[in-house]
Length: 452
Image (cartoon, rainbow, N blue to C red; front, side, top):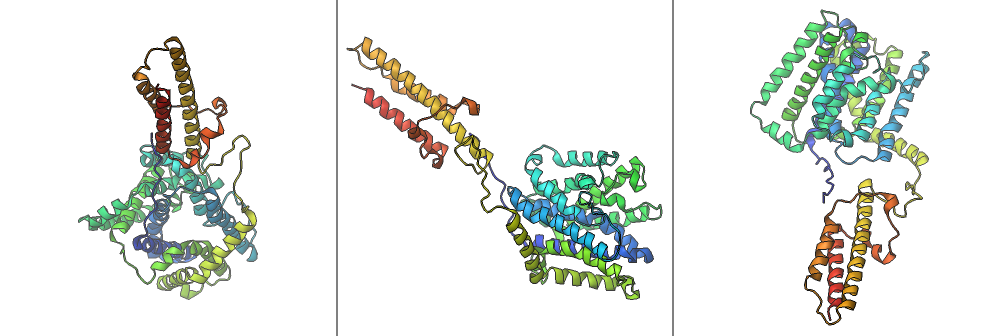
């Protein structure tokens, strides 16, 4: 019998929190410079291109790495789908508050950063199945390259972005903590830094002079809507995968795995991601980001750091989680069990249901086998009253049970007969091995009772 093996939770590591702090800082900085500074500072424009290539792919990779535990739909509803609706609404309302006319298109989360939350919700609901497909990472990359040529993948439900960034999520999901240990011991890890630096310098230097937009790295549209031919789009998207994976491995190899002053922020990145963009929209609408001082990259670096420190603080995190808990309390029933009228038992999972039905079937088959053998033995005793009981009866009984217990059974609900209560009472608490031992002991007792 094959025992289902659950993926273990990721052990806590300062490394992952430190990487999350670095990435959320890059997210905030990349968004704040996009409002105005990239239009007036050429150097910053190159930096903007370089960061956009890898910062969200790296974040998605880390999210996949932290999603190894079996997923709970209600938990993801609370932690992801509710924040998605609230975050998009907050972003939309910040535009309305500034007097702008913006349609409320929650199924097309353009103009906000909430697409990542929606994508994460979809990923976590599907990863346990998709993660079992062989060669899923290269296959998903090929699918994403092809999807860029198709008009079906659009901003609707962020379908284009979900497909484009899925290879990073599944790669993180399949990544093991042992790999981190190995890559940190790799003597040539500084080569990764050189490769990352060269690629992050070369790609913007090719794209910007040729007036190629940054939209290709956002994954929001197909190649043609990004102003590229299909061959150009395939090459640039493939380069994005290459660069992003190299940068992720570089971070895993070189980021300190020790507690730093800002390591704690790594536990509160969702609040930063949730609040920072609506605040920036309001700041831009009030012309704060257009002040001359805001055209200085060092000033915006400082502002980005303030965003991370304030929005990543414990009070903001308590506010964020408190609102989610309140909404979840209102929307989600306290008793989350939904009973099926066709079944008497409640199951923790489909696997438990299958095992219970399998055990019932085994008991039914065993009972039928023992009844048949008992009838045959009684017939033999009536015909041969003076003959001794054959010695092979016990072995046959054991062999018959072994065949029943070891055979592959096809479980169909309409084939399950009514089973006496004494046979199934308390069997849920027994493991299959304990059940087999108990039934074998019962068989031996029956054989002993039949001997003269």
